[in-house]
Image (cartoon, rainbow, N blue to C red; front, top):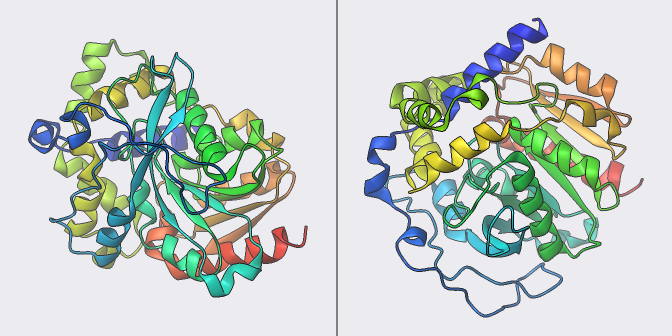
Length: 367
């Protein structure tokens, strides 16, 4: 598949994944936009190297319409903390970043693995890791799933920019608060989340010591034609792209075993964050910023990198992109996940957890 054709296909897939029912969003407003912002006093957080400031207005996602136990459990663990950002991102100098933490199982702590930060794909949320996080923790890995600014259940109001740069800036600030300014960590990114972690890792090689790229976007820069639309037209486009048929198509495209995994419950889970007031504006802000530009940075990453790829990925062709990662990364290796589409962490979480655990506890610990 040529790069041009793949770029068009990825853009179409990205457009598909971006939407959900904008006409219903007013009926499902988050409490974080109804209640005036208040901040809690600093409090100690398990795993953090310093005291952090919780966003006291945050309410975990309402999963009453969801059947999956893993989703309900993950949502119940979600918190939001305030992280420092530049005034260009927020006039207040801080934004709320939501996350889920699965502490390493006590009996497994001697693995001495790096803590792992996991980043979701385009316009998704930390709930994307609902089937993987607990499995990694049970294997002795201190695991975090973090929402990128503007997506998931992060702060949407009083934010000036949801650009790719703003997302990476807020993510780096999160790692500094939770792990310390000099705290070493591994980071995983799925799909477009791969572009975010590539940009962060390339600029922070002193602390980012391992990468896991899961069917990742790393060689397609930008977000396509929507970058150049006037804001009113981009907003209309975002509204149109929120239809159930388009999101359902994305659901079907993501899996190899569609009968088992491309369910209405999966669809409902993926839409939860899109029903928040301000979601559409945040999406347009990102699109008009131009998106991520990771392609030139892949070769700059010296950290050991595990490239995981679903053998039957119908969105990003692994025979082209997985092998390109291995040939471009200074220290990368590829592992295929069989009978799996674009989301190994959702479709094959046991195999994915095994691969990541082996990578972090043997290759990285001994390096």
